[in-house]
Length: 111
Image 1 (cartoon, rainbow, N blue to C red):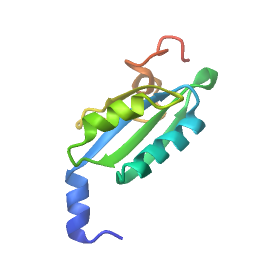
Image 2: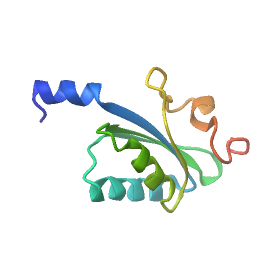
Image 3: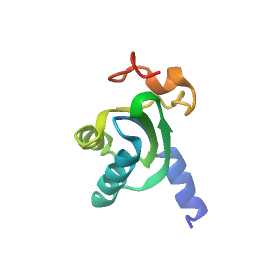
């Protein structure tokens, strides 16, 4: 359990990533394995299945300056069709189709 100091640091140094997937459940496994291999602190993960087997993962991680590298690695994983950093003021809201599909591959056909 984090101490109050660690909790404050994690809350202020957090990044929210949105990952477009071709198979959400397989992508969860690949994303979790990638984070574990890189010793990247996972703060939260939400899986949003969409139509035709596609989906989105919303991943909260501690931002320690390696986000650009992490995004490149996530985008190259099997079952992942794209990855981006969410705006800090307006992260994607799971369950809202416009937030879950905007700006990603297959966005026009997923729904």
